[in-house]
Image 1 (spheres, rainbow, N blue to C red):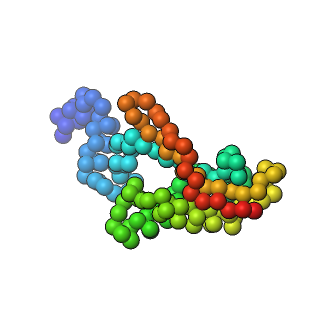
Image 2: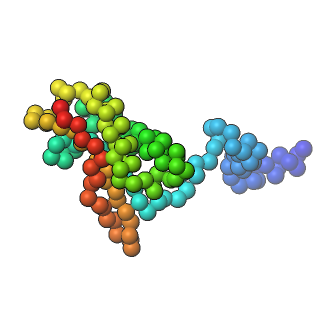
Image 3: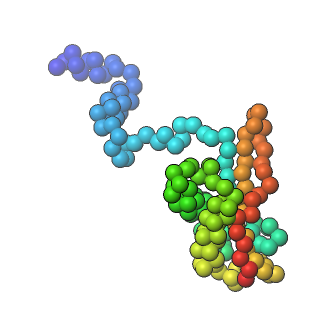
Length: 152
């Protein structure tokens, strides 16, 4: 027993050793999970946002009480419903399918919109998708893609 105690006291990083052994034993049990979503990054990223009739982005938190990331999740969910029916990935969606998903999302957000918080002169709201891509070490972005529009 004394030999074990001496070994333990001389062991460098003993707390870390206990943690590593514990995680090895526990394996994939919440909250001790690994997060593979952060292990690698795609060369392409997109943003979903709502703008006025001129394409000027609206303050989504102020007008819709939710942000761009929530809009993106809703859009990806609707697009997934459309493409999964044909056993395709959302990256293979056609412009028409992207517009269908966009119209559903904009319709939902339109219903929850705080009209009094829109900038004066706003006559329509538009849902856009903007894609950023890393090519040859340089960040490039495409022209925003208009997915849906609703008049006020």
